[in-house]
Length: 512
Image (cartoon, rainbow, N blue to C red; front, side, top):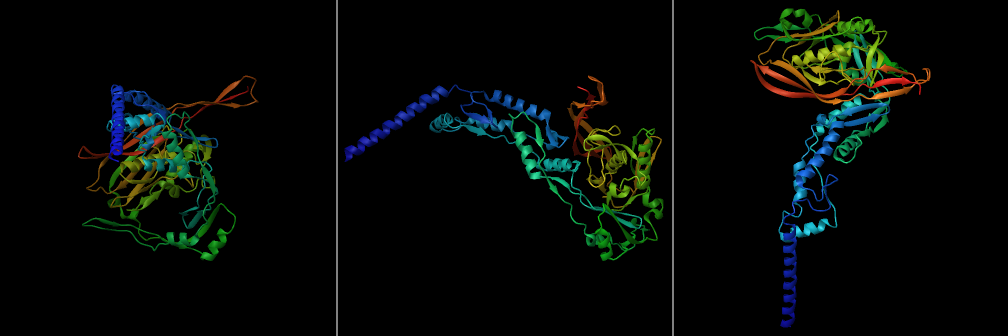
């Protein structure tokens, strides 16, 4: 019995010895090998039998190519670009390549040899941690959705004089955001996929029913007179008393009709004393000013800017109150005095009622930034604008895109808007505070998006004839920063937006 056990022990020792001998020989053979072993890939890219630095260079080259092209999101005939810079992507190439290189090297002789042999039969893929800023990705997707021409619009309302004007909203599409998020991340991570185009996943949806009871509660106010007290200086703002002027049953009857817009009468009890009546003490200081230029020979555009400025001029925003450009200017219609002028809509330059008033919202945006207001909603244009630098515009569209800011100061502010002779100027007045800063806004272009040429068949032209109907212009991506300065020293500098401006295509009509 003992002899059998001894024989087994000898066999085991011999096997162990053989394994150790083979492992040592195998290790000695691989000792001078500085290549990544067989069947190993990083983010789907084969890095087998390559030096770590060379493999990293190849992967970085693939990534930089994808980064330079960005992502093109397609919806019907519309294209929208997202740059990688907008998502603050920070890929960790070194960690993944180090992990790939250490396969077969980080353990002892036996485990290393096992790992090397294992790769001969089973492939290993090491993923790269791209560190995509998910908040920025969500912001990009929300902004993209807001620019879709067939977007579902929820009902909205605003008050004009003694009337409550309610828009019904309209059916349309909404972006399936989780799906789009996955598609974008997959495209970024698929380094060997040359395509940068993604069809935006959308679904049809109807707007919510108008809730007149909820609206009535939101607008109801008791009248309050403005007054000023001193030592310390306090400004108490005014409020008009507002209530629905008919019964809720009558209002519901009006809303049951098939209309795009409904008018509900209001009972308005004006305040006896307005903040504006308190005199210069309430708005003693110029907090910010900004000016843009325009072509005054374009009479329709000039009309729209002058009309919008007249509605904006004198607007007072109380502490903690949110200003809405759309609600202040109202719906842009022929009946309200607006005219057709060039504007951007659905990624094209078109004639639109109220065209041009985005210049005033952009001028106000810059003035609000310089006054250090809290910006709560702002969207950049689809194409670059001529009147402000990249990253400093604010486009608006009734029912979807708005420009909003909150008065985050202790005292009310007053907006003064002047338009004429090719100049749009907006001043913001209020009372200076000890915690005020000098604000500096700077933008820089981070990438150029080359324009393309589109051909459209037009058989009314002579055979072989070509006519350029739209001259193209390059687009770009940009970053905009806001610096807060105290006593000549920069206290903080923050990134306030990353924007993409699509290339305006050259459009040529031809008879082929």
